[in-house]
Amino acid sequence: MPPIQIAAAGDAALLVSVPQVIDVQLNAWCVAFGEEITQRYGAAVRDAVVGYASVTVYFDPLLVDPAWLERELYDVAAAIPVVALRSGPIVDVPVLYGGEMGPDIEDVARFGGCGAADVIAWHTAVTYRVYLVGFVPGFAYLATVDPRIAAPRRATPRVAVPSGSVAIAGGQTGIYPDVTPGGWNIIGRTPLVPFDPARPTPCAFMPGDQVRFRSVDATEFAAAWSERVR
Amino acid sequence: MLIVHRPGMLTTVQDLGRWGSQRFGIPVAGPMDAFAHRYANALVANDDSAAALEITLIGPELEADEPAVCAVTGARFAVTVNENAVPLDTAFDVPRGGRVRFGARAAGARATLAVRGGFDVPVSYGSRATSLVSRIGPFGGRSLRAGDVLPVGAAPARHIVPPPNAGMPLPDRGARLRVLEGPHAAMFERSSLELLYAERFLVTPQSNRMGYRLDGPRLMHAGSSDILSDATPIGSLQVPPSGHPILLMADRQTTGGYPKIATVISADLPLAGQLAPGDWIEFAAVSRAEALTALKRQQRQLQLEPWP
Image 1 (cartoon, helix red, strand yellow):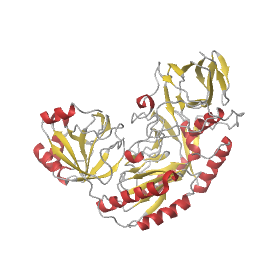
Image 2 (cartoon, rainbow over the protein chains, first blue to last red; image 1 turned 90 degrees about the vertical axis):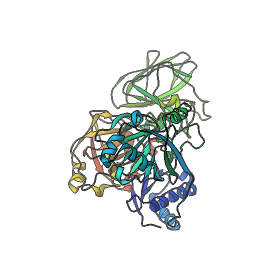
Image 3 (cartoon, chains in turn cyan, yellow; image 1 turned 180 degrees about the vertical axis):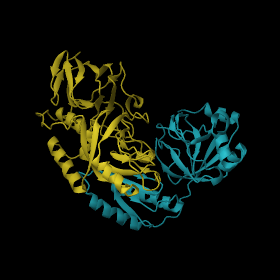
Image 4 (cartoon, rainbow over the protein chains, first blue to last red; image 1 turned 45 degrees about the vertical axis):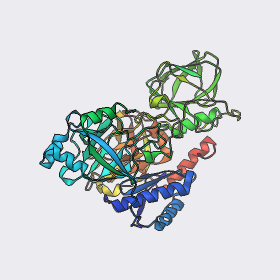
């Protein structure tokens, strides 16, 4: 197991932290630890939420003694080795890059001292890992973006980012599942639906999954977009 | 069923929250004042997790199309049934065709209206709570509108017992909230931690069910103002680069990237949920043991079984 720290996050949650870096192995351990907690404790644990380098364990303080739970979490952690990477299927994400769909692609290109075509080439060249799902339902935090195009968050967030927008913020990339405010650089749009409550598994991505972006033309995008449900 | 004639300012269906789905990014939601929610359900002999209405600042007008038994707790509204005043914190009858109207509000920001049998709206991800931000829950996850119809479930077998006289924790233009320090207190300057406990903060108009943006002394990060995104429990006091803290409330998102200097204890969240823009907050640090003692005391006030 990696070195862990457990801290109170209020009186109804414990924050289990591994060293605070974006690291595939450490995150894979967090995913395995979160799954083990969910399976082992059932309803005694209300939620186990994986972060980049943490798992937050929620409990009811009237039913669960935090000192007992903390000891349990250390024991469970000790039994989970630094896991072999889970190599789930690679989720293919078609993207129409640039133009109206990706209004910030030129800004990202300026950041990289390159052209929009390079942004597309470098964004599609990487197989990303889903580190966590959060913010809004189905929003997957993917890393790691090629440092040449890892443009920082925009100074002024947009009030409404369109659903399906593909965006970059530093080393992270992600897809906005629904219209929300957002400060990431929008480089394209996908017809893929990251979150659909009607599906048995509502999220298209979960922590540990792999993602590959693929550039498509306007015709292919339009055909897929017309069949989009949410 | 109850028919909504006027929805009020912001009226939503809530239960005790959508637990168990945060790993999908689905927020917990649930009541801003869980004590008022559970108390109202207790008064009509429901399970405390039954769905009830959360009513914000300006209340609704509702019509019962069949006889119903209701109770209102939380903020001190003047409530009438067919123009006759009914008491708060007590079960009351609404006859067929009866109109429940919310009038002037004397204290608190949010009331709970429970109906015997609970509101039998559809369950999504194990809960009837409305998450306004993620648009999950009954009525497509939105607040109620005129013309909405609220089905009422079957009455529970238990009889209504006299009210336990729990007494509502309500703010008087402000509230002192107890916190556990952390989990990221070490990322702040020592002087900022002292300011946190020494100074008053004001709830700004940029506040809602997601969280309260607070005005007051700026809390300075000792180094970076970013963390690697992690989970955001209710009551977290997260501090963005501006130094002005945000108190995360019922409709908070599941994860966030700002350090959390302290977290309001469970026993004081109901009081926090009754604050309105313009109210002040003072923070006081307590221990885990004190937090639990306070929660148990509140539990005994309700004379209820522990939370499910």
